[in-house]
Image (cartoon, rainbow, N blue to C red; front, side, top):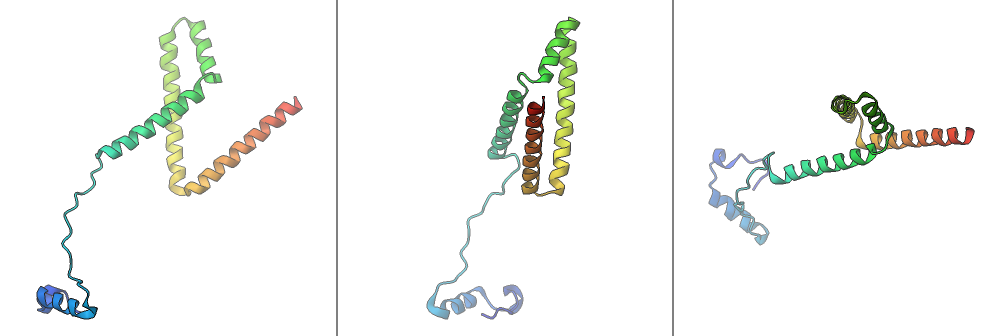
Length: 142
């Protein structure tokens, strides 16, 4: 069979003639196999939901552990004790944390659309290294 031949329906060659021609060349059976139908992957598949659940769980645990005992939590604790309105302080601090998280997510997705993941990873590492060096410098100076 020539590579520049027309498709089967247009050239007038029947399927059996093509199969015969393919079988004769090098005695290989190159007849097209009929593949079983494959179901399309749906966005709502269980694996996709599990992946989202894993991302959610990892994010929750990471942020929860990072926030325990930090200055934000201590500030919230002090404000709640001073104001005697713990629910108002809770709503205010929750709104602030949600706002800063939203800002981080939006900024992160904007950066990810413009830079490669490798560049973002290296930049974050360099920034953390610089911050660490500045903190060490501060400790040794004071």
